[in-house]
Length: 361
Image: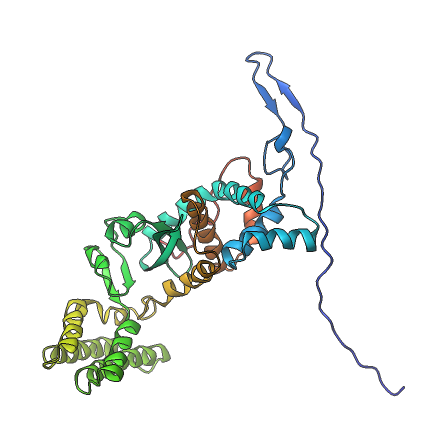
């Protein structure tokens, strides 16, 4: 033997269930004869009798994360718990556990909606969803540290205003969907990625060699100006001057779309969206040029939709939107769901977690 070498190996420990027995004192008031019972800090329910066997808060938290964050079907979660953790529970039992969890996070969900309404910049988006095999719409309203999901029957102004409020006066970073324009008090920023995609489509499919390339160059120039500002090579004054030149250039291009109808339609859309094209250059550190935040927030939901198709009931949809909102916000704030959710589940009454961060006004 001439030398020693070291090898490292990381592994998972064997996980076996913990069974806790709570011996609960029960008494009656001598005056009003009202029944009262004690409660241990680790309990998640006051239920006794036939409902005395409860799934613990850590197990419920794992089920919520696997289903709402990773899109794992309830049947597979029940199988995982049974085969790997030694916990016997049915899919129906997991459904009831998640409904109880949703009731506990209801105040937190309401608080997150208030935080979205008070945010200076919000990015919304929506995608199709199913509730009871009927078409619904899953909305996401996103800031750098908060996300609220809501499942609504439509994708119009009323559904968006249910979360943002009619008087929302912050910056709205959104795509070109017309209902967003009805927020009269909001400052709009249209998604440049959507506009650039339309430019590429016109160039590739319609062989437009005049209008679309010019628009594409202007938008890409705007993004380069933003990048140079972030790099410190363009001052705030230079940024303002560049924004004015870009607006003038785009305005001149819009006035001459050419004779083709498909190009004229794009020019009309740009004319409508013109006030919202370069808003991000007013505050490049705070305002995004695209709605990427909302699209990223919708990706886990799209995966879940492909696996299960949506929710079977309206109650299931409400559970989905609340738990998914809390989980996403926890992730954005670099917090631990394994700590926050069990604390909420153990609390005797529903309470508010996830207080507004300092950046929310």
